[in-house]
Length: 274
Image 1 (spheres, rainbow, N blue to C red):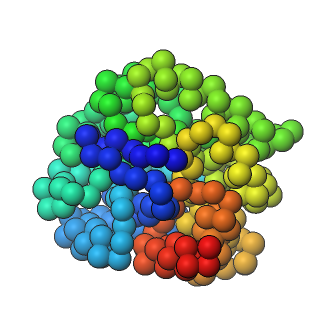
Image 2 (cartoon, one colour; image 1 turned 90 degrees about the vertical axis):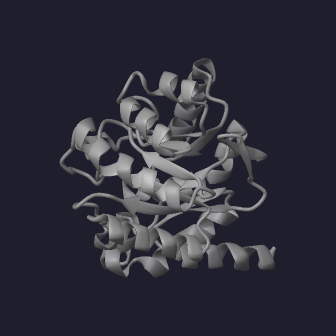
Image 3 (cartoon, rainbow, N blue to C red; image 1 turned 135 degrees about the horizontal axis):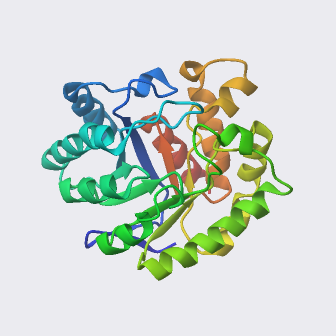
């Protein structure tokens, strides 16, 4: 799948990458990912880097179903200073900002972020694609219908894999017209999708390769895992590793995870197996 141009630095995609999740939120669905203060943020970032994270993804808003949405001012307060400090301490580590606000993307990149991760694929802020095009950073385009507050009601498809692929084909062209050169596709596991839809998309990952873009897999500790196993997010590490392995076998290029060491081990073992 070539390389990602991260502010002039080329990151090869010859082997899968691990993206560590850092949530500056009090209400993310997995309690272990809630980072309220800067010392804990830096401690968790250092641990993820030591365990092999290739990218760190910083978000300031929970996107679990029915989560209370915070405005861009609060999101800016939560993420921009954190990104600046992370970039100061580990300038060699690419940082991604998880936001659907164009202004947050712009200020986060100015603070040191080098990627934008947008759960809405540019549908919630009409200025997002043009902003990312001007910033000239990689863009993670995720599929979602509705908003986090309404997406559960939107989980209706005739063919979920085909409809997600159709969405990507349209958005890739929109990204091209906006001047975005590096687009990463995220099928949006758990976003306006039932557990059945999620398993269908996981099985259909190879079909998304026809779009010619890197694929990001975001299944870590999600409800498809812990509800299927009748457990909790806190007990979903083993299940996450199983789905990460399936995703890698089906062509995932980036794993977005809460648990870096276990994801890296899955990649190493799969490479040895191949």
